[in-house]
Length: 371
Image (tube, rainbow, N blue to C red):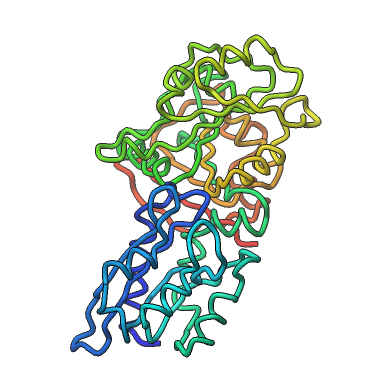
């Protein structure tokens, strides 16, 4: 494959990122249709998976290209589907459009596809090449891959800490750590996630809305998840008050207060019970299984030290976003991961530094699971 092929696949990847976090339960895929007979080759169609998961990227790109798709090359970030669901297979659409070549970044692990899409295209006489920019595609589609192969979402834990590794001035003390640039980055993380999760303590102390409030992205606020074993968080919490606008789901134990559960349902909150854990709280693996069953692929964990530590100790973190501010809070402040030193916790979870960049006066470090 050529440098030109690489450039067109990069274009498809950028398109796929456009609706990341807004297409569950389907992955956010990008597709570019290219007339390679032109000099120079030119894009005649482009598309990405629609909000809500439909239409598929290939359908949008082919519609855009029209008759120009005949004899063209399709660059797709994920293997085209070959099964009948709510919509016909994308492989059939590509064959019927007369596409001559299909270049795919990553294969689809869904048992209903898993190589079947590429086989169908080859059987129709279409030239198929796979693996171009595969690592980038698998990273972008990590939520989909995790949900299909592991039965749980891709978990992203986000923490903001002081230079001395503290998350708050003290337990139960609301503390502003980072500045406006880091906050804006957090809102982008929200906009590209299928759901945001916090524990009851964070929801109580910070009383956050957990919505995306960047101009132009207000409608990209994902579902908000609260872990509250006994439903002790007050119904007057901000995130409960607008549950009719941005969905909220609470996971509790089966013996949680029934009266409180009914009050939350009246506010539009979904209340669901899951098995308990050894420490008396809700089982995090059970919550992740329930979320994956509902199509949640990218889960952003924005809780405090307790919930972050619980995910780390359970070895359920795939990506760790660490914002560090150039300030110190002192030895009496709350450690970011309680008894776990951050670097040691990252090491034990197989998380390695993938990128680091400035965010105003702060720094954003991104760690990815390597094993």
